[in-house]
Image (cartoon, rainbow, N blue to C red):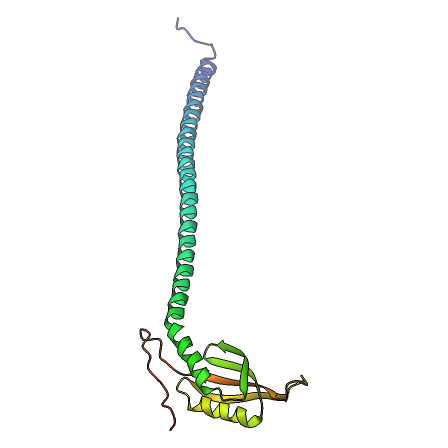
Length: 196
């Protein structure tokens, strides 16, 4: 007589397959977790390495900024020193001019005038003084006009002296300084020929 298997073999086979599937799924999840963990560790290592490089770069940038600030400070000092040297050289070149100018002022002042103040601003002279008469001021202006060191006298103010002991007039006039060309090694080249 043939044997008939009445046991639910399909149900057992399903259980076996389900168990195999669960084991395979568990293995896949475990493998995925391992893969993600390894990726995270590698990425974290890269991030830490890049952060260390960034920190090193920031430190180097701070050092370079300090060096740049020092260089700029040195450049500023150099420019100030060069400006001072130029001023000193200019003053050295003008030394003979001042001597000649004072000598020329002495020659141009006629009798009856005395000077109270002389101020030079660039190539302009401002002369304050007291004159016994306006004729003497005119003579002074003609002398300035004939000078090789001064030119263009312009009378600014003439007023009677407020001091009763002084019977003269206070005056202020301006004049241009035109005597020498000091830009070419201090050579004294007369720019104006004296009128005869």
